Amino acid sequence: MNRDIENYLKEVHSHLHLDSRTEKKILKEIYTHLEDTINENENYISSDVSYDKLAKRATESLGDPREIATLMYREHSRASWEEVILHFQPYLLFGSLFGFHLWHSFVPLSVTFLLMAAVTFAGIRKGIGNWMFSWAGLLFGGITAFAYLIKESTFHEIGKIFYSVFGGRGYFSFPSLIGLLLPLVVILAGLSIVTLFALRLLQGDWIPLSSVMMPLPLFLAWAYVVNSRAPLYGWLSAQMAGIDGIMVWVFLVCGFLSALSIAVGVRKIKVLTIFLGIFASLFLFVLRLDGVLNLYVLLVLFLSSLAIVLVPFLLYNFFFKRTELDMELAELPARLKAMI
Image 1 (cartoon, helix red, strand yellow):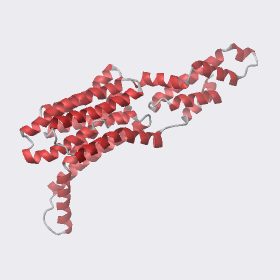
Image 2 (cartoon, helix red, strand yellow; image 1 turned 180 degrees about the vertical axis):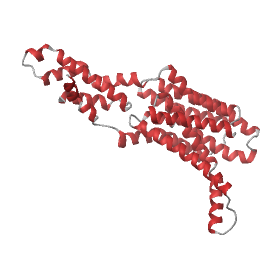
Image 3 (spheres, helix red, strand yellow; image 1 turned 90 degrees about the vertical axis):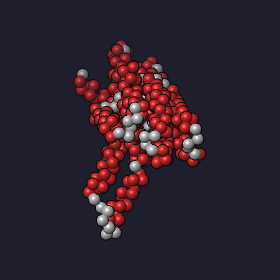
Image 4 (spheres, one colour; image 1 turned 60 degrees about the horizontal axis):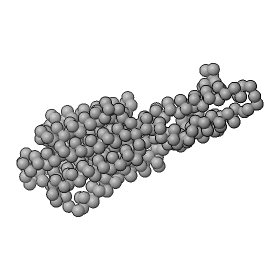
């Protein structure tokens, strides 16, 4: 491949920040356009003007590669209205669970998590769309909150089984073992699906992963409040119902800003809406609770909110960012010549 064309494609490639399939398609189109421009130039056929000079002219005439990459990013990262609506659906679903006080009921909660897991797994197998970010994010946040709420009972059951096996006491029973393993299997399976989903996202860019993790601080705050208040007032008390009402409004706010982040095509606005979604939902939740969260918990939530943006950014730039052209793109000139 001509050096000017290769450098031009590399520069476009380094600023695209899209999934690998879309990037390959865009770069192939740009390369084909450059080759067509060169071949249409009569000087290449009828005079002594070299191919390299014509390649340089073709890249210069196409424009600044960064501007081309920015235009392509805006075009391909902006979700359609149908995708925005699909993206907002899981927030409505979780809002309904809290609005009708069904989040502690086994069947509605199980169906919700199975649906979230199925959509996320489909994204891993068949390709990830913008609208799937919220499904994976609420699955991750919900599982994290569930793990936090059952941690004490889980450690208690582990202690009983350990003591019965090694201490010689008769606390051990298979029903208790199943009751211990089933939640752990659900948590590990859900986290495994979300992890695979996140790895697929990081192959293209870090912003989608931040969008996925957007509801996490809200779930952590809610789990902490429920864990501290439910033993005092009861799971079905008026105080807990009041928290459910707060969560409905918080999910609507977070969902709106999350949907807005995939509807725009400008990277800075995407990051800004993710920040707004995280802090606006947390602020609304904390404000309505009126002093339930202490300073230590607020600091943890603040740091976790920053980590939602910083951790994906660092992971992408240190481990996943691609600086070289894909081998398939590097071999493209030879393939085109063979076809001709």
